[in-house]
Length: 212
Image 1: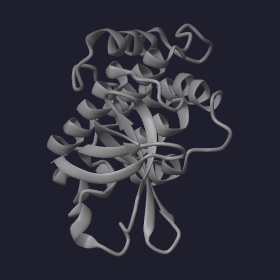
Image 2: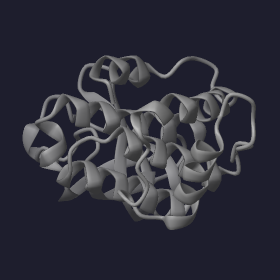
Image 3: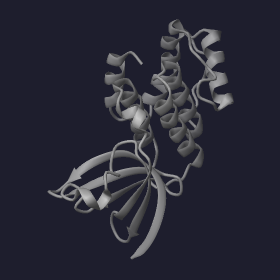
Image 4: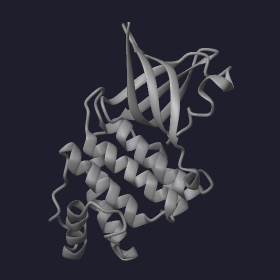
């Protein structure tokens, strides 16, 4: 059995049996991977609060046949500013669900890792912004090779220009969509995302209730 370390962001946690949890991570080194955290449901000391949604971790893995086993996890950051705000939680869940649902297993993408990390950092430090969420979505699509065609019926040149700028600047907060253009942005982004999903995003309904 081989040991390895990885820097990752927790995308999802799933109960597994009576005591274990399956942790889905997006890692800098290996892309998306799943690992079994043995006894994580019973022992609070073993992972010391590290296994939380959106947590930024350094994990220790045992690699063998089947799913890797998480033998330990060190907290690099937990983004406390997200956890106290429902709109921020919804945005972070949306980003993590998109990454989980749209990325293949064990295919590294340092650009996507940085995009996800920077979005969580932005959510931690600033109010949840509808513009930032669209910024994340269009750049995720670009990185994955699913960039939408910007010149389509029902979408103004102003909205197309803002989306194009969002893919060029690389900095959250640099592009702001007026409220009237957010729906137009969604006319491009949502179908481009839905094309690669087999079911609806759970987090999107919650975000609509929050108005983000």
